[in-house]
Image 1: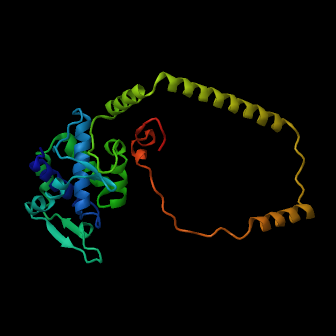
Image 2: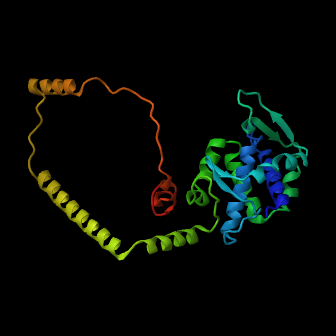
Image 3: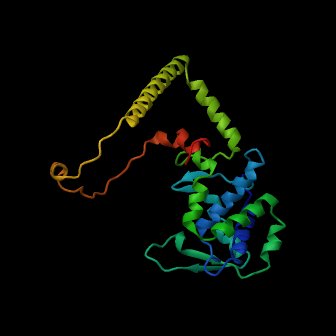
Length: 260
């Protein structure tokens, strides 16, 4: 069950920390508060066997972690500390154009004493680093391990990375039969043999003396002929890319040994 008091304190603390930022970075919107509560839960869970600080249920929604119950606590939490709410005129009337500002400069120490140490230090670090920079904040939370181990609309699991990787490796190992292992070995052997032959061929070719290139009339005529064969220049088009559903659970998203 979600602990609304803890959620409220994190929201209030995030705004209090933001109020010490440089001008232009002191106001936060709803999307920022939700992500900073997620950061608190993420960092707390790392040393509490996957248990979150707030007990909120997080899901993979659009481009990041989301919890409606956390979003619903923003207004009451900030009104309780007398924060100013500002509406910014725009064609789109949604949460992205609401900004909150804290007037009480003494809030940080007061709220900090009521938060877990891991929560306060990580939320403070995140707010000072990202503030109201929506793009970089979303980019950061999207690459966290609960997100990389989930598909859209799935519930996020906050197990430590090591346990998550071992769990997935165990499941994948069970799915590989002896026949598949044999087939994989045969493919690896064929690939190894092919690579060795290509390397040997390249080595032999590099030793052979190559004739100097000729940039004469024959070269120019050949270049012109190739241009004519190629036809007109490539036309720029707008295309739609469809992503297969199984990509969300592929190793390329969650395996720490693969570069990203």
